[in-house]
Figure (cartoon, each protein chain N blue to C red):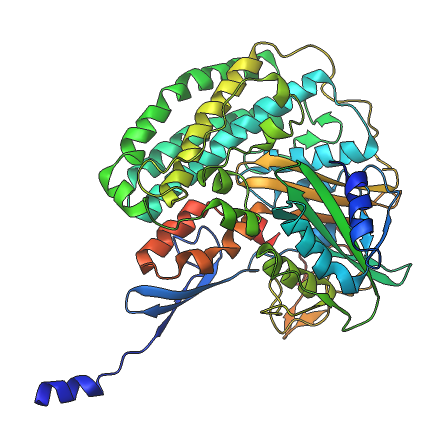
Length: 378
Length: 170
């Protein structure tokens, strides 16, 4: 009697937890306001904008070539892919052809960048789940790609390498050799990554059946890239709407199959990235021996005038489809550049996907989105 | 299916809402009346199999004294992007129906458009700023936006004036 009377007076309450903006598992300056009921997430509201630099506004004030470095700084873990996307969009608008040699270099470099970006995703995801060692392996191997990029462009993170009409510099036989050596070395590393993390029992338990996103959810939220492929849909712009020379190379599009749990869970998304590294390696190996001779940059003036018009062009970046909607009024500076950022939409799903999960699973889900806040906020 | 085919089908279905197909190169867009945008987008998803929204945002046509909101919808079935554009008078407090009830992606994209241009979306579940702080004044991507000198007593760095010492004032 006494006990039940006490139980009646007990009150449960929701607790508001603030995660970030400085937090090791938010992958940058992301703040998530979590309403919890015990250990259960009742709502999770991402607050973004801490890294907002209004790149789109900057772009309206500088000439066409000067936009490329801004684009690099959006997704700073995949700068090469980003600036390649921008260059392709402007080239479409201008109607210029890129020399074959430049196309080869671009694809090789952007696939290496994809590997470097996925290595980062792999390492930090392990870190989120509590596995520290994979991070060291990933960074050791990523370092070697950065060395190659430093040799070709002079920079280690923000390269300004993909220019409109081609590339900033040519690649030399020494760099080709360096890339070949790297490919031979890295081919053996992926299986080690898988042994270390992918099939680790604890890792699988933490990620399988967590943060499930099905195909319809991906469509409604406009998710692309590893999110959509993780949900089992075989869709890759490199394959389905090939740009550059992707139609000439042979590679597979890995998709999630629900091997460890439900289709579209965090493990599936993670595994798509692991398998994409192998495919990227395949692409680089196919192209590296056949780089044709010729110029590495087409006949494009330093000061560009782009004809009046508008274009919406998308390319497959490590985090999904990066789109550029560009309006030109025929002058030396862009009139409007709207960047369709894949991460912006990826993180917008968080509330719906994590509702009802444990707080620890929210961390596992955020990690599986592989967001880069520089691109979310632009 | 090409954009031209789609335009003709839409024109037949919504004669009052669909205005014209633009001549812009290389990508044309379909001009839609603001009042009919929700109906058109709903029909594109349900009947024409445009499963996803690839992009959404605003444009400031200051010379024409107009704002525009554009919608790039993508169909995995037809492998085509269709661009819709709605033109609005260039005034404060102007609004357009929200499509967040059709595509969930529109929720954040419309918030971003509001944040940058001050265009409001009627029927949006959560019409707040998203990238700028909630007490930010003005709409940064408007062509006539002036960067303020101070934000709550904090000097705002200017990047396009003076010498090359960007980020001055610190």
